[in-house]
Image 1 (tube, rainbow, N blue to C red):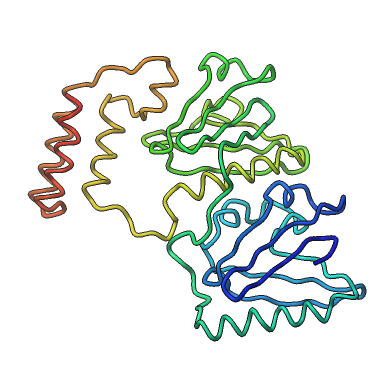
Image 2 (cartoon, one colour; image 1 turned 120 degrees about the horizontal axis):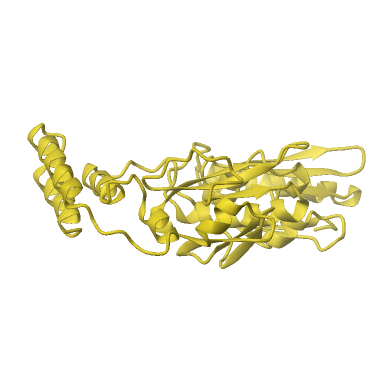
Length: 304
């Protein structure tokens, strides 16, 4: 333990608690205590320096949603898996590294990537403030609300609610120099042709420290609840159902986009019939099994 924080290892769990000193990055303090199971650890090292040194924990690729969301977008000082070691604690730090490494060997923990998150994301609800609005995530949906600086296009569209089931991914481009960044929410069936300041599924980022902190936490919570990037692809029936749902109105808009317009448009029966014929062709060609075809067909028939 030290001014920068405390790391504790009991043989199975590594607990990381950030310090409350003024020099500790506020993102680490906002993230709070992090509990890392041994199976999520790929390695640990102690790097000696002129005044003390630094502990550095390396996690298995894909184990932590926070790293997945924030990688390359936050400074090293905000990394919860680094700890500044004071000069009188260097011996303890070296002993700590030996103990964790021994446990990894004894438990035969591989350092290979994983296909599921081994750690939970931040608790919700969370709100992140951006340049032209805010994003709030309650665990079920993301709500975008605009402030007085928003462009008229977004203001006319009104607040946006995006159910988690409709979200396919999030794009985070940090601000760089004089260039604004953005965070864009991708939904099923949507195509983004508008610049960030006009896109109602997008928030403009100005690059302030508080903005970066809140965005990182919100995206980590979202990432933990979205499908893992290395998880197996959904079965063909599920893919077909999602495609049918996104194209049911014949507009190319997903349900979240239609909800943003204030009311749901009626289903286009010609479009639904065309989609049924497409599924029939996939079934005849052997792309879909009998069971997958039946499930996908029922998903479309429910739209009539």
